[in-house]
Structure formats: C-alpha cells, structure tokens
Length: 281
Image 1: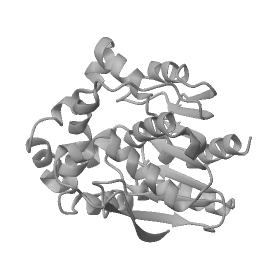
Image 2: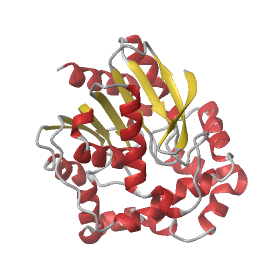
Image 3: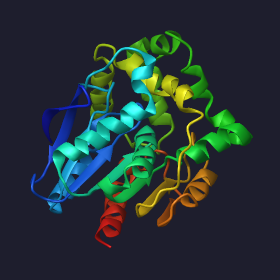
C-alpha cells in the first residue's frame, strides 16, 4: 500500500491507499484496536477491480494526529473528520465500508450526510440507536460489553494494555478470532501502532467520549446499506444485526455462521466478493 498524510478538520490523517485517483472511491474505516492497515487485503483487491481504495488511520490511531483530551473523540468530531475528508477527495458520492467503531462513525455519517455516500457496508457494528437500546435492556449484551465499562477508568486500562508487550490487546484479538486469523507479522504491526506516543490513551478515548453522546438521537439511514455479520462475535450479540437492519430504509443483512468479529481477516475473499456484488448492483 502507498501512504500519505491528508490535513482535515484541523488534524493530519495518515492514509493507506492504492489505485487510480480518478477512479470510483471506496473508503474503509477501521475499529478498535486496529488501524488503516487492517484493510490491506481489501485495499489491494478493490484497487485491482478498478477502484481508488483508501483506509485512514482514524484520529488517535497509529500515525494520525492524537488530540489531547476525551472530548476530542466525541462522535461529531469523528464524523466531521470523514465527511470533510470525502469532500476534499471528490465532488462525487463514495462507497463507505466500516467495521467496529469505524462502523459507528459510518452509521452516523450516513444519517447526517447521505449526500456523500452512494453505498454503505457495515461489518459487525450495530446502528448506534440499537447499541444504546441493547446496553440498557439486553443483559447478555451488557455482560459482553464489560470491557467498555473498564475502559472508562483513567490510566489503569493503558497500563494493562501496555504490560508484557501489549499481551492484553494481542490476546483480545487472537482469542476472539478463529484460529490462525492473525499472523505474527500482523500482530507485530499492531504493536508498532500501539507504541506510538499517546496512542493507547487516544484509542481508549473513543470509548470514554461516548458518554457525552449517549443522549444523542441517531436517525434511520436512507443510503443503500449492506450489513455483514459474523455470528460468532464474542463482543456484539447477533440479534443487534437484525435490529440494525430495521433502521435501514434500503438494507440487506448477511449473517456468516462461522465467522467472528474479525470476519474481514478470517474470510477476506468471501467478504470482498460480497462487498463487490453489492456495490455493483
């Protein structure tokens, strides 16, 4: 992948990209605790299919800027980063693919700025209104989300994540994925990103800032949307996928029975083909 920095919304975003800059744009948004590199198998594939494929390190991650303070990671700032960046890239609508916390940004962006998107693809992240509902009423999901509550504590989560060469974070990836999903080199790439100054705190601030947005309303999405969900996700209940589909005016849902939260790593060829079919419809 090629790399560059784009200045947007007062910060610098590190961008991974491949393909012809004049081609149709497809953007990939990562979640926690990854960074733009997480999409390398998708970027290479979609560039080969004639798209201009880009994946930023979102604010706080890897080589992108890391503003200080929890409030710098409120949803409005995260959405504005991507919306303003799209406007810089092109006057045309783009395709947006997102996973985990990147999916939260994508859901909000699609609701607030439908004029920027041609198609939306979400991997294992519920619509934010659905997430809030389940965190209030779904006992199973409340227990699954224990780590999000732990991350609210100052300093201690950073200390735990950094211990023993980031063992907590690497094991969180490895144990929640199907066997042999992440290679040793991929895990080392993640460790290198987590070692960046202030990175751990900035990444955790995404969770800490959500409390400021808990009362925000999240409208339905009119952009044609594909939800792809790994049913073996240990952190997010599959029933939230069906509820999220109900928030889409033009939505489709594909449940993958033997995939986990990390489905784009476990089944890159299958996921790539599913996305390709949807965006070419």
